[in-house]
Every structure is written in C-alpha cells, then in structure tokens.
Length: 266
Image: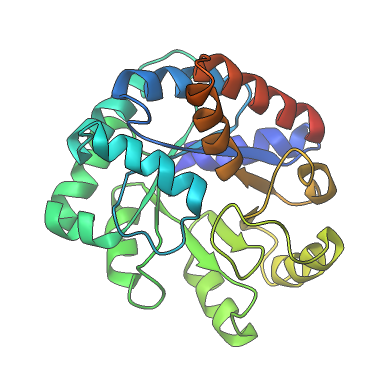
C-alpha cells in the first residue's frame, strides 16, 4: 500500500477539511510548462493527478481533450510523462502523484515495464479509466506489490453489491464519479443528492478514502467539502486554455485558481 496518499488524507482530516486533488495533463502546453504548473499548484493541492494524453478518450470532456490535444501536438510521449513526474518528485515539497489514463497505452508499454517506470519515478497511484473491476484485479495486485495504489472507480449506477466488492478489493482510495457525464459537465444534481449517495458508499467501509470527481468548480466545491477529497480537473484545463488564448501565463493563473479552491474548503 502506498503511504504517501494515505498520509496526505490523514493530514487533511487532522485539519478538518477534504483533500484537494488537482488534475492536469502532462505536456500541456509544453513539457516544461506542465512541470512548472505542477510545481506552482503543489503549494495548495494535497494530491496531484497527472493525465497522460490520449487521442480517443472515453470520459474526458472538451476541456481535458483540448489539453490532451496540445500535449499530443507538442509530441509528449509516455517517457516524457515519467520524466515530468521524476523531476516533480525531486522537489522538496512535492505532493503524492496519481497518473491517470487509458489501458492501451499501458498495454503497449508493457504492464511490468509501466509499473517499474512508475516505481522508479515516484508515482504513488494509478487510475486506469477503461480497466474496470473485476478485469483490473490482476493488474491492481501488481500495483500493490510495487507499493502503488490502484484507484477503483464507482458511478451513480454501480449496484450496491458491486460497490461492496469493489471497495473490498480497493486499496487506500476510491474515486466516486458524481454524475453520468463526461468531465467538465455542469452538475446535473444537487450537492445534497451527491452527498447522500456518497454517504451510503462511505458507510460500507469508513477506513477507505472516498473522493468525488466530475463537475467540481470554484462555485460547487464548498458545498461538497464533507467528502474525504475533491477532484478538480476540467476547470484547471479551461484556465490553461484561457490563459494561453489571452497571452497570459498559465502557471500563475492556474496556481491562483488552485489557491482559491483551497481557500473554499479550508
């Protein structure tokens, strides 16, 4: 089990607030710029999710697709993603890193090679969007042996029986998708309804850190702060796009946004 992720959640619980998890795409808008964005937001984020760009995403909305397109156009490869992580993890005040992406890249890279690269560069966790339970059990065990947390996903449509099985097999963090949508969509249901569903899941095993993602912005984050953790991705990708289009520095602007998000839940 990866201790860095658990320790990050423990610290937040002692401070009586949810963990703030950020998501950005490696290589957006350049490898150096994405590293600088990571470095700047890590002052306020508790855990940093880093996406590896993919040209046929399943759950990514327009904002993340645009970020991924810039990274792919920039020529960012998976080896570059690992170099960005390695450089980031060498920083004195770096945060736990969760890589997020799709299985075919891992498959082409080779499962064992991918896990070894994760271990050698300091990756703390993995989210593989299109590798669901129970098909992910074998890969998740490999991750656990390497002390890398494999993060399982739950949706509003996941049956109670299936939820119990997934949580039982999960490591130290579970990701709850707030609504049936791609990332970046506006919340279709109230925060109250999301938390009602969240609390039912949380009661199954209170020791597992359960985070909420999808539809979380500056406007919605404070209403959901009773969760163990909250993931913000599309809003950050949108801010990067806006900064680039306006000829502004995305490093400064995204850091300011993450600082504001942190203040909303502190």
